[in-house]
Amino acid sequence: MSSNKIRWPSWPLLVPALALLAGILLVPLADTLIRSVSTPGWTLSNYSNLFTDGVTLTVLWRTAVTAATVTAAALLIGYPYAYLMTRVSPRARGILLVIVLIPFWTSVMARNFAWIIILQDGGPVQSLFEFFGADDVVFYGTTVGVTIAMTQVMLPFMVLPLFSTLGAIDRRLLLAARGLGSSPTAAFWKVYWPLSRGGVMAGVILVFTLSLGFYVTPALLGSPQESLVAQLLAQRTTLLLDFAAAGALGMLVLVVTLVLVAWANRMGGTMSAIGVVAAGRTEGRR
Amino acid sequence: MTSSPATASGPAIGRRRYTKVDPIPWWLKAFGGVVVIFFILPTLFVIPMSFSDAATFEFPPRGFTWRLYENFFTNPIWLDSLSNSFLVATLTAVLATTVGTAAAVALSRMQGRVARFVRTLLMVPIVAPAIVVAVAVYIAFLGWQLTGTVLGYVLAHTAIAVPYVVVSVTGALGGFDPQLLRAASSLGSSPSRAFVRVTMPLISRGILTGAIFAFIVSFDEVVLALFLRSPVFQTMPVQMYNSVTVEIDPTISAASSLMVVAVTIIFLLPQLLRGRARRR
Image 1 (cartoon, rainbow over the protein chains, first blue to last red):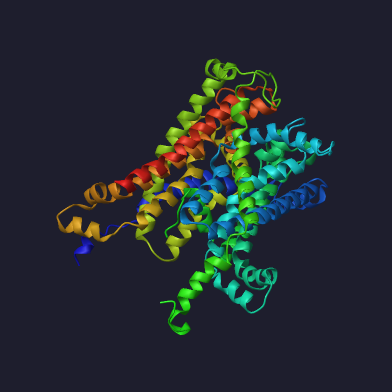
Image 2 (image 1 turned 120 degrees about the vertical axis):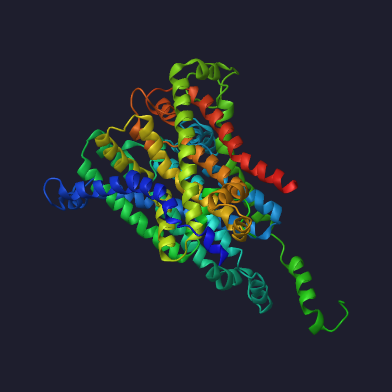
């Protein structure tokens, strides 16, 4: 075949990317892992300490609760939004998709600074609550404020897998259910919701997982007394210079994250959702 | 057509009923509107703040003045951090685009388990928590004496920017017909010439998009930058971080507004280019 002429091996083109990935990511991570089990001497004490030092478990629990709250909020907001996206005209759908990606692509520091202004004591949100008679609601320096700001930026990761699942559901099934005498609520829960569960699972796992690793938002909007795991990790590294303990905690967070992402990926749509978010694609391939 | 027996016109009637029985409820539209505000409004708050005369972050902003912008463009600390960010982001964009495009081209020609594994591996920097990566990179770079150096920043940022280039170039390659290369070859073109003359122009928009994303990823990156900073070299997001945590410096509102406007323009660039190409 004449095509043999243009067949030169492709793998050398991968070498720079893989070398970079290995040198900048894999080697440091492996180094961190080895340090965490070899300081002092070969031991797992750095890992068992995580569960006995009294601080780490509390922080891990608080992080999990915060991530779960963000996930629940993102699902409650994202599900109707994704549903709306499946119903409107293609043009409106494109606009809704761009809007959902806005928080993801606005500058991290600008976005967090904006939330500081909005949620600070005496800021617009607090004034609004005071207007309605709630005088002592505090957002800045609390996990509530952190949760609100995190939900905004996590929404694309909920909306995109949901949108791809909901878009594939044949809505005539709902009409069939109605025609057979079902109420709208029952038709939703018995027909639509079960069909959407794959997307819900993918979005829930993805948002929960990514929320576990947030650093800048809790560091700026939260308080040191209510720190999340990323702050603890940073503190142990840069202030306490306890690289072995930090490494053990980092490995724990990394393994949990990768396992959950792999699981979400198996539920479908995750990697493509990340791809869409990453590439900021407005309209898929349709 | 509608007067024919039910069996023949079933689908038509069904479709007509479909829009009638099944409108989008008004509350869903209202809800969508509220969510849109939740997405857009917060970031816009920084713009009125940047014209405030107050020495703190108080809201609503007081007076109207260009003082904060003046400070941003005259204060060497802010200006240095801005030029540092530009330097790092430009070098990152060049390196990540080269490396990522090569990887995407290679992956598009490979099939099977290995290709799928490499593809997943290359996505790890996006899903791995930034803080874990930052801690590991920080500890390693301390040993290699790369913290606080331009090379250190560029290498670290390139590692996390490459996946974005791979995704966007892979997307462009998806619409590429390999037969074209065969045609080029049968017309006597060498493989490298065929790549430059045939493949490159066709995937150039994907490459450009990838380069833009790589630039933004680096320009806006905070977590790694916080760990890699040195007293003499820090990027703009780190200076913004300092101005909230250490100094209470309202100049950050000017910096934030500039960032929002700049990133929005850069982000819209590929969309505008794509729109123009479609009209052509």
